[in-house]
Length: 109
Length: 117
Image 1 (tube, rainbow over the protein chains, first blue to last red):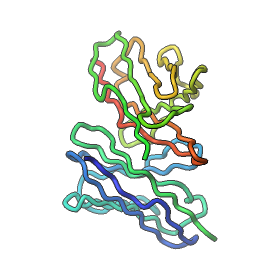
Image 2: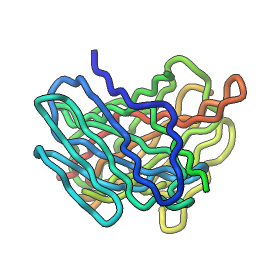
Image 3: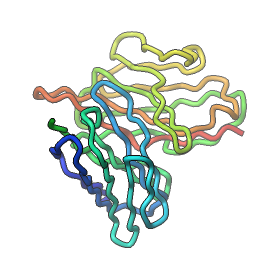
């Protein structure tokens, strides 16, 4: 079956760095998305990786290793507003989105 | 976790026709379902909130007469794109809200790719 795994919850300190991991097993691969979702709001697109490597976008970076079925989202200089759920999703060979359950990130002062 | 399905997964239609997309919560009852549209490398755009037994609430700028939403049961919501045009070609995603046991989570469907010729 198809599966996406990410930690349920993580806690980090304001100003620090946190890495949220995502591993996937899907039938085919056409890219991996990271979204941020604040409670009660629609998910916000953060990144899309389809090739191996690290993509940096401001305080957020996303890494992909297709051979390992692995991605991570790196958040630097954490701010209180970064407290949210972070969703990992993969497009399979049919461009169907396979969703992870989301990682709830709690930022403490 | 809870499972949400969408049907069809992919549809190609001619301009001017109507297309119905179904969203089902397979193992829980969802009083609220959401419909999103995904533009390439952009955020999911919330189109409307669908509440079972009542009219959907549409976001600003979304034509309710063009995107008809029906939430007739606790496990099924449908989105009908009426008189589809090429600019309606997009990836449509639904989600269902699960509030069992004190939790309040949103589970997403796999999406439907609509291509209007």
